[in-house]
Image (cartoon, rainbow, N blue to C red; front, side, top):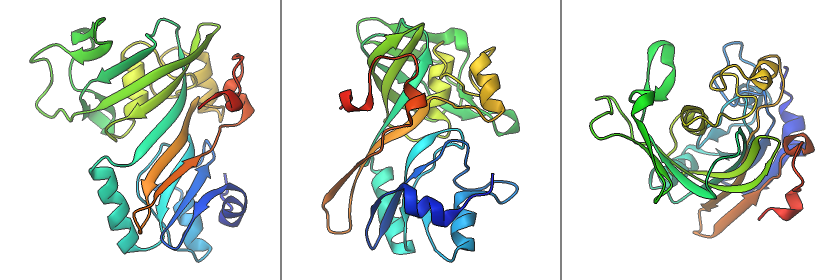
Length: 249
């Protein structure tokens, strides 16, 4: 895919001021680091605009991305991420309908062979506590290289063995949402890495849709004012559900 930065800026800018830009990244487009150089940041540089991501979302994930317009602004925005004062909310469609109304996935992650991300402990050591609605590793099961990772979610709708969720990554590890739901047995529909034996995942490998969308983003601007951004996903995201973006809050 050849990325047209001017088109992205014209049609997908959600917020902009002197310090930051929030864009709605299309699914299937890399934000940065593409081996062939076909990513959004390379396209921005080629168009003569300097921007730097304050965080990252995966190629297969669509939705809001916060970009800094200067190194000074980047330092301030990344500090907000480190201090966890930025609020990120995703929409996800997972396979299965047995999730609780609300829940917490508190499973540490580690980087394995070939730079793959996985839960830092054996799958069979994952325990679910019905009272707290929390998934966690059994005591002493985590490996030494474990890094804390926490995701919370709220169930929005169910249909045809699928569940629509609002997901909040409390921490911001690479692939965190995708790994967490894959490892507890509710993989994201169309995930090419973590949805094992999923025909929708095979479609995603060929350019189809992975049902994970960066939906809402709130951060403080340089003057300390809270900025709230929201961009609903495309209608294809909601196929099979009776809900519409207008019904979601």
